Length: 149
Image 1 (cartoon, rainbow, N blue to C red):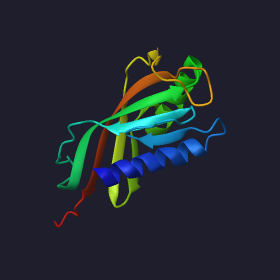
Image 2 (cartoon, rainbow, N blue to C red):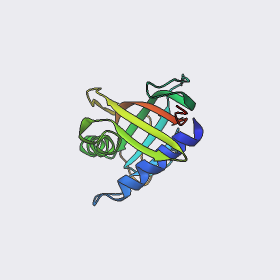
Image 3 (cartoon, one colour):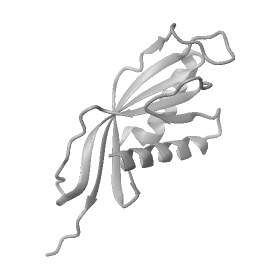
């Protein structure tokens, strides 16, 4: 799961870097004292081992990915969430890409994109509190063994 999750985070960073907009930094699991905008991706606590419909799965796992989209303002947090959704679920359809010999798939789970303000944190070099949007994605990664028949 770690290798696939790292590949996913790197893919997201590359795609966000290609946007002609404010740079968004992708972090895995946590971020401390970083400037907004940024995204924190974390794997759900209960990944499962799978068998796919298309054949036996090798090193397969699936679960959820949580994304915390952070901005200086509510509008920026919503923009980060929209940009991330455009990468991980383009056109609101599942994303499929290959990395490290695995097929990685993600699919957005509608959550309402409610903006929260974290008043316990102050963004570095500012006097503002970060605005957050929580998103959830389904995730799977697997290598398919070739069919011997």
